[in-house]
Image 1 (cartoon, one colour):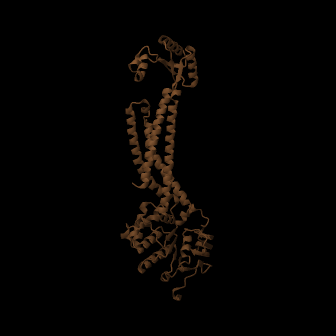
Image 2 (tube, rainbow over the protein chains, first blue to last red):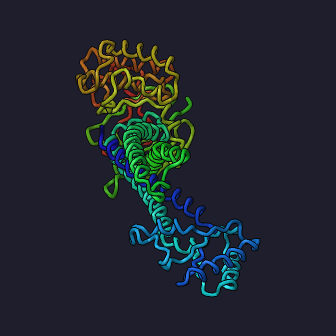
Image 3 (cartoon, rainbow over the protein chains, first blue to last red):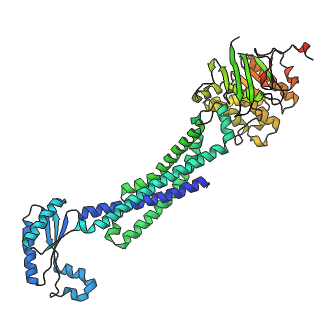
Length: 277
Length: 235
């Protein structure tokens, strides 16, 4: 494997991994958006269980009457106890424990206006009830995910630029090395395009070989990582699973890089030859 | 006779140095045979480089095949170069190509289909006596063999003008005779031939040839090509 092929393989390996990270994170962010859009939780914090349950019932009744709300459900006491068990142990199920009542709401329209109307409705029914918007609560996570996606996209673009630069340098070195032959070709009547085509072919072959090696290795690593994440059982990490379209996009990256390398080589050679007679 | 090449007050200067060629004016008739002579450093190779469009002059006008080539856009140069065969003094064979492929190169550059390349290459290699060296790389050929490959490459495309810089410098007298005979045959088919040499023995072999003499970058007869003196009047 030549130096150029090696460089292309490394570039493609890093590019495909960056792209896979970006695509996986984007998939997770999309899923999070879909899950959190228009979802609210009402907390009723009252020490007295009877008064807490009555308040929860009032809120539930008010919400059911609202056209903004698609679904309302009170989180069962048993579910709350299950959630608290890691911290409180068996005491989590103690009926005397002042655990807030939680009411899950799914809005018809995920926009802020509907959420504001529902919050006002809840405040009207029970003034000290707290309304949490899931989207607001998870927005730092979502923001971080979008940053990762942008970073991955930036890395892919930087890799593409670095690849083009490497190709241009290789083409220039090749032109210097084959200067005598190129002069002869010119004197025999070869056009710049004919000469550029020779370089393009060489660089396309190197890029294709490097692309296959680097791309295949990166796809293998990505597949292994995906399997590992799926096995963790985490909903968030599991949501980074790549779809068919993502895999196709990753598989197309080596082809795009071969096209980019070929184009860069052609441009570099034509520009250099344009300065000769 | 229609002229194929016309130089008018051509001067050539490399960088900021003195003029290598000064006030060179001449015309080459289509289908003629010319020898270009002169001592080493007289400017023969520079004049040939102007002829085969490897160089633009610093001043003056050069007309080739009826067109002013000084201001010709470089995109049109390949078309002109394909009409000129060149035998370089240092052969300039492509090192990674075989003898066969070196000879076939002008045809391939011109876009001749591969099935039409084989026969002319075979004939040309037979003519220069290199059939058995068809697969050899230039590095494995002797100086004389390389020169014959260079000549075969220059003439295979039946150029309208053949420019040769010391083409017989590395071959034995018998091969020199054969190569000159090839040039003469091409000339009789209508190719204008310009051979730069300082081998005066060579000049005697083509009695119809005309001669141009360069001295310190100037053509000795500024009005045009000198007629080579008939053999009986030569010293």
